[in-house]
Image (tube, rainbow, N blue to C red; front, side, top):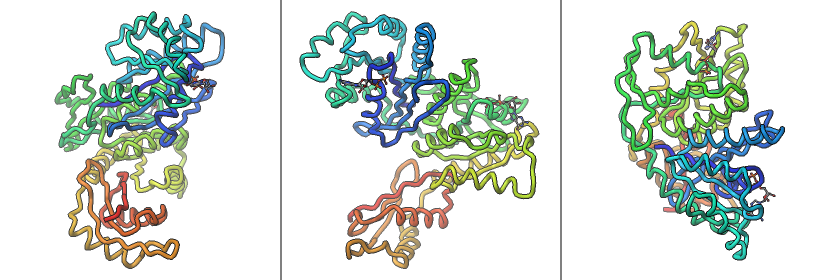
Length: 433
Ligand code: GDP
Ligand code: GDP
């Protein structure tokens, strides 16, 4: 159900170059965890109409060779656990190194699709040099040059064949993913939700991949919690835990309708929170932010208002998101949190009838026309909501290329005012009729 591609391999083989080529820098976030010499990258990409997340597991610690090998092993273990497809990169210039052999040994036991990629095959002469990689015992491989792009199309063709066609699954129940940094209170929140009378209905059998949904019935709502296994803590090392939790977030966000982002109020809204928010937005999921541990915050008159303002500043321009101040410990606003998540779920499914939409929006765009561009006037004639799983609107006009970002935002804000899409990313297209 999810589509996660992890890139593994020892340093300097070209993982981040390949990553950048796959994601084309459009949609990448960088996770600069202290203690790693290299940033880790998460990005969103698509090929032949299939969307997927790409993770460059490249971060590694400085230190002796031992630590180094240990890091690579962890990296591979994580990828094995969390990714749907693994791309293993080796370097034709160096040939097979002992570390390549070790990684290959780990990967050989894995049941998931593995693509071995011989990188830096910049010219046909190097094709012959690549042959030695058969000795790694992983079978066929792809030869590519991440720098000039040759071979990457064939690689992607093969990779997406192993990905799910459509991550959307038809289920009337909301699917919530509880995400956030380690220690924010996710497991406490889930436990509070589940309650003592653990009302688990079923473990939904997923597709051929492992199922990660559990169905609950609480507070009069029925919903699936995605990936509650995410609360199990695998690693003791801080930066690994951080990385691990982001990997989990990527995975569970892909599966959910609404991401419930738990933030530790005592730490404020930080870079990592922003990353996870961004992931949910990029995946066009509903979002609710819980500012948790509110009981620990010393409050004055405007504390809540100021905190909220700060969060909205960080998440701009997508600020139409519910922010709820909770204390999981004292159970303050737990119900409100789940109720809001259900509302966001409903907002995300919302469909506006074309006639109603035109009636309201054409009036507005006639009153506030797009600014003239090079002496030309843009006329919007018609609009409709697309039959997509998340709200997407198309506005037909004579000169769509002249519509600028501020006007797009204006239209989005009007839609939000009129119809309540709180917590839901909206996509707006301008097209020629
Ligand atoms: P990583 O440590 O595995 O992420 O490797 P990088 O992506 O940082 O690349 C390491 C070095 O190899 C850089 O100097 C890249 O410019 C170079 N490199 C990456 N891909 C290619 C390639 O396809 N051909 C050649 N000739 N160099 C490459
Ligand atoms: P997770 O790593 O996000 O799953 O976080 P946990 O649920 O394990 O919580 C981390 C720590 O914060 C635990 O010691 C919890 O008891 C504590 N905690 C969680 N929520 C709250 C809260 O609302 N108030 C207070 N005071 N402590 C909390």
